[in-house]
Image 1: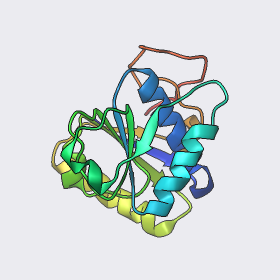
Image 2 (image 1 turned 120 degrees about the vertical axis):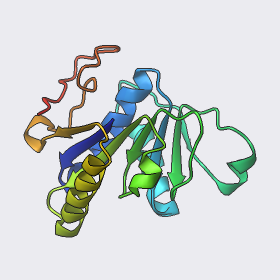
Image 3 (image 1 turned 90 degrees about the vertical axis):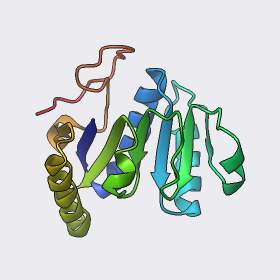
Image 4 (image 1 turned 45 degrees about the vertical axis):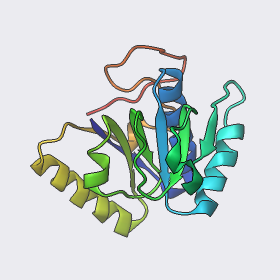
Length: 166
């Protein structure tokens, strides 16, 4: 399943943290894809502080980790480094469809106020549809960054509103 979640640039990372929190609380192992060490460190700090009500065990994946399997339920990686055993890939940055296909569930953010990223998301949607992947669109109006259970998933339902999905 590939979720296309609409957001604005200023809200993307807070929303990313909420999707990570939801999947972690649902018992899934999560990988967050970034494109730089600086971005990974920023997300690391955000995951420690964004929610007063929860704790999300996580760490930044380093090249030295290649030899061992990561035990943390949430891994932040720099670049397209496949993590076996991960059930959910949450993309802070665009990723190749080839990489995303390796994961059972992927969250891709459609950044509405960045024209290049918006166009990139449109192309990704077309490519994924051509490959007959299961796609789900989460409109911005349904996503005032509060994410409850993924559509159709009632395990671990919290008091947060779940997004309406087209």
